Amino acid sequence: MTSHVISGLEARLALAEAVAREAGEVALDYFRKRETLVIETKRDPQDVVSIADRDVENLIRARFHQAYPGDGVLGEEYGLEHGSSGFTWVVDPIDGTSPFVNGMPNWCVSIGLLHDGVPVLGVISAPCHGELYAAALGMGATLNGKTLTLDLSRNIRNAVTGIGANNYVTPAFVGKMVESLLDAGGNFVRNGSGALMLAYVAAGRLVGYYEPYMHAWDCMAGYCLVKEAGGWYHPFPTQGETLTKGAPVLAAAPGAIEDLRSIAGL
Image (cartoon, rainbow, N blue to C red; front, side, top):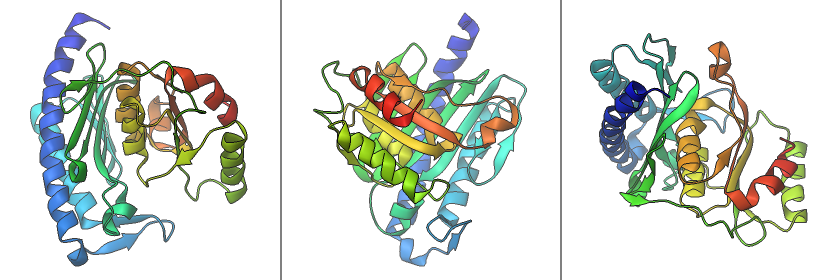
């Protein structure tokens, strides 16, 4: 990384934190009046989208276009706009739309940033919990301004692992994944937001997170957070159109890497 990239990062991190707070407030307002939202299903009845998702993504895109017109943006609702700066924002306006529309607090606004394909910034706002996670390459990770550092003594047997699944993955595969984790002496939670569970890995609340098929907008912010807190992540394909496709996602604290790579076959 060259020095001008790092200096560009600091300004972008400050902007991302401000945008995540603003977007989180807008999303929270929608959450409080969710009975009035029009809900649509995507490719599967469990996969939903609301007007809140679209409005929040439009807000985030507008802020980044205004501040950094040369940056690319990839968002869940409106796809990929290529940029010229080498930076691409990767945005999920509301990760955990299903909890969101069903009145559960486990959703978040996820804003990641790639530079030449590498996750270099991650900000996740969890408005119902009053939490803002932030990280940038070489600058560490924080939760509400407090530095996050992972505990080397935690592993899958003395801590909890997060898992995710969706209808891109067969029930049998999901069953085997859970069985393998339990067989290895682990236990798991699933809260409906992969991005938030990755933030929880960075915060030491979960010792790892595994999802067999996930999109870039769900994981790029969380990947940066985990790395800057002292953890590890399985690389995600970010070159060209592969960035818009799904891939396996795995992030772990140091003491859980080997076990979870074995369970995930990665």
